[in-house]
Image 1 (cartoon, rainbow, N blue to C red):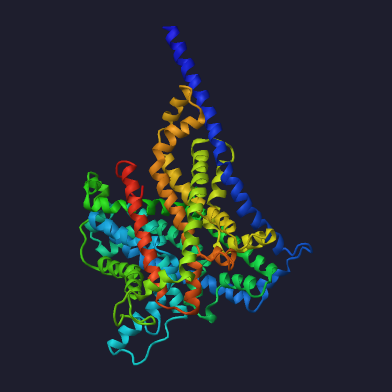
Image 2: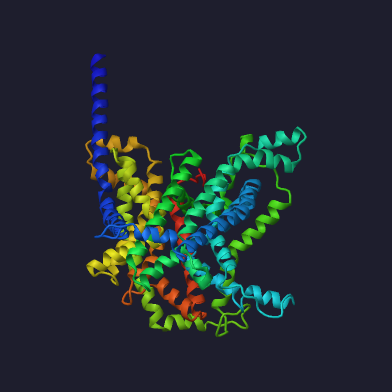
Length: 595
């Protein structure tokens, strides 16, 4: 008997020792990602900070100028105000949709979820271009108003503050709706039923019981939207006029037009400090260990599972809805404010997609809606012109390289953080997630300053390095979520049987997480293929990407060829969505989307 006990204890000791060796080996897997981010994110930011302090003279004059300059300070205040208004609009418009999602049947909820997330798969530049077509002098709004006889002449909607509000609110709405829904779905509806049974009206029960319980979701979504809004560049630059210049646009102008690097560096530092301060506020308000970057990460995981809604709608997943517990039963929806308001907001979310596609087939030589006739001429123009095809090839090449590097390093980093145990794993996680929360304009400016010193601006190498850093968080989050669902006993048992760390990774970890790695690779490719801001600084004239070519076209000519390209990009996004669904089905049984 004692011999059996001793053998069991010895076996357990060998298992613990093997587990320690495995965790130590896994910890080293995050080293490639850390080295890349130190060189591509931390070092450039450090140079920008040094430059903002007036090196080698060391002065705070540039920061003082931001506080007293009659131009800079009002633009900073304007940027904060725009971000505030967009946040309020997103909260007001997003709440009915999130509330509607928790009140409807599982099948209808699947449709709404797909409608909310689908625009997130569509290029930001495409959506902004669509709003230019909607709000232009010959666009949807003016054409409708004139057809109805409400106006005699086109209204000035484009290149105004109003257009900026509309475009930014459209882009930010999913970032408000998803955190709201994640909180609302956990509210016990029996509390509302109890309030109504005690004599409260449904309106009173909502405002006195339900709404206060939903405030954490409102706060989480609001802070996230505000953080992302203050660093927004593309939409304000295209939809706003010269009088609507934002702080981010001014940073770009200081570099590209005035070559005032010290002031641009100081403005970038101010923007980073403001972002970090808001992330800290987010943590303290919600009393949570997660960060704003982690919340964006959860949005990425939700988006990677979004296509499972189709399976739930048409397959057996609908039966998986949890109805056995009264806590999760939803009262039958009554037509009213949630249905009408949510329907209007959903139409607003999908409007750009349904407008840009008909414009791609227009026979008119300029943007006008509805098209006077239909033709394939703009697709023929795209495929026959080298100034469109060559940037497309460049984008696919850079996207493919980025996908490979980001997937390999992001997967290794996820293995190192999840399966390894080391004192600095929180620091490594924060470093990997940093590019996600860092305003992209700041990263672009800092990389431009660093790469220019080494003469690689305008090369594909520069774009691949930058895009890999940007795509790493996407891969890291998706693969980490998959690794956390693995049973650690599998790797430990393999180690006890004599398998080395490489064998454990090759025979157990990678096969079990292969579908998630495939989804992460698709995210990495899209992150590179759709990226614009970094490309504006690093591409130069020799390495023009497709988003940069579209940007130049929109800024200079706005011809329907861009609508044809935008339609092709929408098709590419849908193709990726289908591939994600295929990989999700290979990963195993259905999971709760917003667990």
